[in-house]
Image: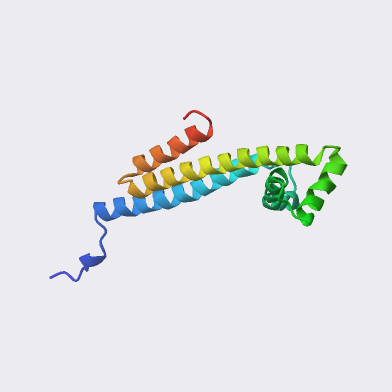
Length: 144
């Protein structure tokens, strides 16, 4: 009689499941990197401190355009407008336009990420995971 413990033996199904899990984990990591790079490309030449001011500037620009800006909001935008030589209204309009474009880009990336994540999670084999990554790569390249 044999003393071999067969409970530790991996079946082909166990190996396939482990491979799929590893493929999904790698795909999720790749997805994060690709999306981070896409966001970084849009603000690559802008200092981080300036990027951090964008939400406050967008709120200030919205308030200036609506005629409801606080003294602090007006002061913040006036400083930049004086340096650039723009009127306060023109600067506010420019900020709002850029903010809308940025929000649209982020919304698109969010949708692409969620769709890819859903496809990765639902994948039953590595080729389906690869197809999800190919789809987001194509979408980011402007093909879809």
